[in-house]
Image 1 (spheres, rainbow, N blue to C red):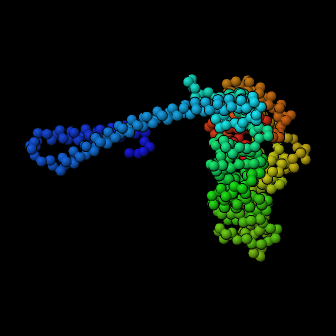
Image 2 (cartoon, helix red, strand yellow; image 1 turned 90 degrees about the vertical axis):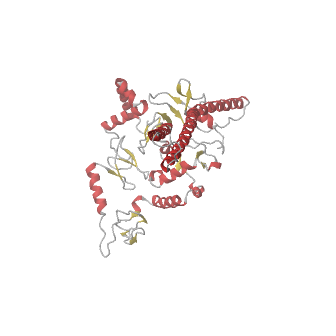
Length: 447
């Protein structure tokens, strides 16, 4: 019997045992009258009797287990309600203590886990689920989206320092105390639970835009927490740190396409570098396979990529020479190397006379922003209102096309992150300035 089976599984198993008992009883009934009453039981009859007793015992066990499981499922169903009631009661007590502190002229205490949880989660009521929020003005509710409610991030009070107890992980919201191996970002007073921090470090080894590690655009003091990383992850992080710290135009990779290991910085002087993974020799000058006694030639793969980029209308970053493609928005490009340039002519941004928008891209981006702000369902239900909002957004973008600094808000209702394309079923972060949608990870550690 599986320890994780459901009530329906137990009922099916009990039915099978019951049918087997009926079969045994039918066999015994067919034998009555054919043998003398004082005749000794045959081995087969003894086996049937033992099997029947075992099945009866097992059937009783199944019935007891089914009853216990039903009680457990009932308790599980009530757990959310009981937990919500406990959270509400604790938050009310914490609010009362905060009010007393203000009345007495004391410093406002830190917002507790119950207060934060009540502000940004749904609690069950007798009529369904209702989103709740207290009256603290540091948490602003914006009911301007038909697909969800947006709630601002909660700033720290002026003059206060981070408290090691009761701090929540900036990514998942779980408690992240030092006793639970919480990681503290002193530059912005945010905390990370161990799981979210390890996930951030692991993701940064695959996504260069997350390197160097940062929180709220400030460098993360990684040296103070390296000892918390598993040895294999620490080794990969060190290797990727060296690779990403090397200017993109100076990186030398193994020319063997099935390997492509990073071999270190390249050199203008011709020399051979042997890959320690596959023993392929590379020329550090042209980055092709080693070619003794031959002049360097331009990398064949680079020529093919340049030809494809020209055919597709892609642009090359003037900083790191990476090929980029404009998906949406204006012609202001910001490369992963932080170089800002014009997508039309590749000149440094604001040093050319190129137009900043393509009319169709301007319209597409206006529609995207209105969809993100009001929801797709709103656009379908009220197309005239949607069209009017898009026209207004086009005029707004013509006057102010750049988002100088993101202002993130929680957006309940879920959706797709426009940076990593992960689909989040519950909520996203939405910038109030450019209406961009991003997951919590990218809003905190990348953008």
